[in-house]
Amino acid sequence: MGDLKGFYWYSAAIIHVITYPIEIPVTTTAFSSLPLSADMLANLESLGYNEMTPIQAKSLPLVLQGQDIIAQAKTGSGKTAAFGIALLEKLNVRFFGVQALVLCPTRELADQVAKEIRRLARLTHNVKVLTLCGGVSIGPQIGSLERGAHIVVGTPGRIVDHIAKGTLKLDSVNQLVLDEADRMLEMGFSEDIDKVLEACNTDRQTLLFSATYPDDIKKISTRCQRDPQMVSVESIHSETNIEQHFYELRADDEIYPAVLTVLAHFQPETSIAFCNTKIACDELLDYLRDQGVNALALHGDLEQKERDQVLVRFSNRSCSVLIATDVAARGIDIKGLDAVINVDLARDSEVHVHRIGRTGRAGESGLALNLVVQKEVHKINRLEDYMKQSIALEPLPQADKKSLPVPTMVTLHIDGGKKDKLRPGDIIGALTKDAGLPFEKIGKIDMFDFSAYVAVDHSIARAALKQLSDGKLKGRKFRARKL
Image (tube, rainbow, N blue to C red; front, side, top):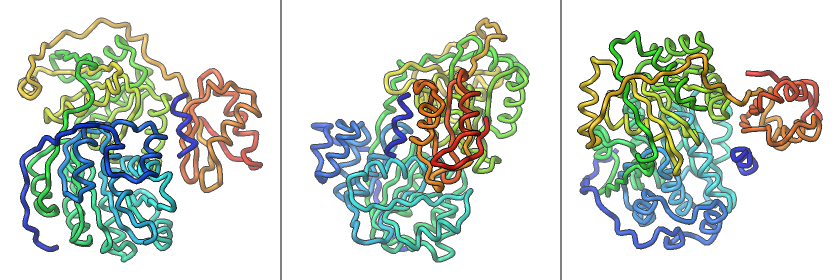
């Protein structure tokens, strides 16, 4: 029930020097040691943000001083708060122009970033944070821009669309953040990023966050930053919390049955299975479904509504296995992920470490299960060099493939959302007060503009669906169905 509670708050040439990675001396990790406003400190305390994470402790002092930075930090390191706090501290709320812009590779990450910034701004009066992403109609976004915004969070393609239409002016941007810049470049957004840079105020602070540090990051930094300091932290996810196995397979046709074997053996409630191509994702999805596994695939061919539903079902534990490519999974932060299955080994060792770092977080234990076909042993050699440890290949464990993980929850879809003035409390009230269903059997609730999703335990799914279909929410009837 922990997740449920959260729903109630809810170009000019530039002389450029890149310094060597630096170690910022950190004498204290308390937020109170920073020159932050009283409102910000009070809000951080109310959110339980008492001590800074390593990336926050190293980057925030520099950013608050106005320094450009290149920060190498992985998902889950607290990097959003690292730049979000700084953006809000430098905001002039009386001026309703776009003063800060955050670029993200995916809509999912943009939504997460905007949500976190809004949380950080709870005690800062009248801050407007606007999300501009593709996959939805541009018309309502234009209307929102006409009413003014302080901070814009968006994907490069949609930001460029608004620039071209003249609906988004960036000449008052004082701070620009490129979040997960490495993935934006991988996804082919380099040209769009250049167009955004050209439209931005040149006298600005530029913050570049990236999980990896390839040559392309150095090049884009050269184009958009002034004397940046580089800060880097190790992943906060201790590898001692991750039980990692490498299973040796002889041929490609053994891969999909091996996925079934490890699922049956370890019984993870939730797992992400990584494939290197969209075709492999779909093939594995068909195979697992044929074997009775509740699985979903996430890749670039899905419509935005389909992507939303896939992520909702996986994050609320009504789906056991999410099959994804690296690009599609970027920006997804699933709490309590039990296992990562590398169906295809990552082409890059740094990406492998990033993949497995999604499990075993916050002191919890996790599993990283890697399938190694003989022709890919060379990747193991590279990985050993990168991780500075030897890797032993193992035979697959024995398992009863008839005993497969089954999700405990079911997702119900309601054909009404925030635009219909629906709130999570309305759904909870209908299920507990009106239908008399136990509160502890209700899981995560996700609210969108015109739809809502509620996870319920299998044992009450039929009764919950009947109540939502036949009863009323806020005096109105809405259609409901099981996903």
